[in-house]
Amino acid sequence: MDMISINDSEHKLESLPQWAQDLIHQLCGQVQQLTLRVRELEAQLAKNSSNSGKPPSSDGPEKPKTNQSLRGKSGRKPGGQPGREGKTLEAALDPDRVEIHSPMKCSSCHGSLEEIEAAGIEKRQVFDIPPMLVIVTEHVAETKICPCCGKKNKGEFPQGINAPVQYGDRVKALAAYFLHQHLIPFERVSQIFEDVFGLSLSVGTCVNMDAKLFKNLEAFEEGLKSYLVACKVLHLDETGVRCLKKLHWIHVTSSQMATLFVFHSKRGGEATYDIGILPKYEGSVIHDHWLSYFSYQQVKHGLCNVHHLRELKFVHEQERSDWAKEMADLLLKGKKMTNEARQAGKTAIAFDEIATIEQEYRSLLLKAGAIYLDIGNRESIPDGLGKQGFNLLRRLMNRMDEVLYFMRDLSIPFSNNLAEQDLRMEKVKQKISGCFRTFCGGVISCRIRSYISTARKQGWKIIDALAEAIRGDPRMVHS
Image (cartoon, rainbow, N blue to C red; front, side, top):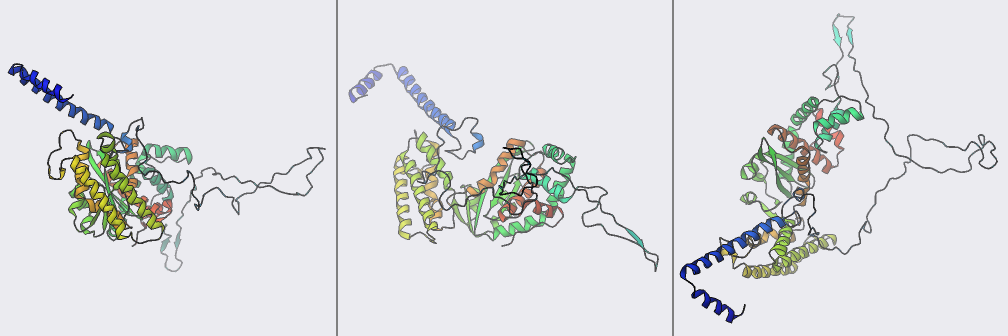
């Protein structure tokens, strides 16, 4: 609408009665409010796991329409890369069994070949699993009478052989492995043992086994906490789970070689205090900017930039803000620089390269700040602009050092992916089982999963490690 038409409209409006003018102004205000509300609702519907912190499990049966990779193009061809060691099924040098297949008669003249020596051979190997057989070991304690004094002497059963009939440690270890590594419910674990081994392993036996394993891992958990406190870099995250019809939380503290899961009724400071690691820790923590973590000022904080990439993608697509796309490209540029530095064997990035990234970062903040009307000094969102972009920009302004921490120290990762990967199976458990029926059940599950996850990172044979823990001698992590 040009200036003439605008002036004509204002003149016509002034010619109307006052009550009509008031009504028009009121309706225009309502239209503006409804437009903003529609924009907010559309933004909520547009959120998915690729452009926000929502988990993939919340996307529903339809994949996100904009679910493009946040990593960008690497320039490499699909498939195995040069220098990568492939894994394939190789022939065994000493097979357990050899079957000879000899021709008995000639296919041409039908003459007998039974006594003829082979002129050549061709070998093929088949890797298979034999029928699952349970070995029953009977322990017999003899009683002998001393011929000198007449005292009766009874042989001692091995440690752990306490009942007339019982399951062995490896049976219990395998049950724990199914329950807590692959999250198979109790009833289905019982069904597996019945179908595969012919053992009637009841649900009650599994529950009792869990309780015993939990008790035996108490010393392991204490040692694990001490180990994590001594680590240089830790990853922190949490996820909500339902228990007793209320929202509870599973907290994870991860390093490259160990994992601690803790079940707690709270998400924030009370939980981190009870866990007892952050109050003693003085290294670097990587997390997704949950405010409770920032209350520990004796540690160095690094923020998960994959979270930032998702949010920047949302702001760019839904709020039509070009600065968000440019900021995402800048973060990926910094990530590429750190990856190349590590591959070249460098211990740090040159100061001038870091300064260049920081200067570009500040320039983008100034550009975005002009768009958002200097949001650093505002308590409310400017009209017509999105809440997501407003909050994200304020965080990027106030936490630049934490966002770019991964560039100043090459031991600091770009993202909090390690903790997210450790927690991912907890979301799978919710899809399978829904929730924990008791608080105690959540606590038991987290301690046992801590042991299994740590065993995998340490390179232990998990079934052996679980069997040792069931016997009361769990393995420990050492600095």
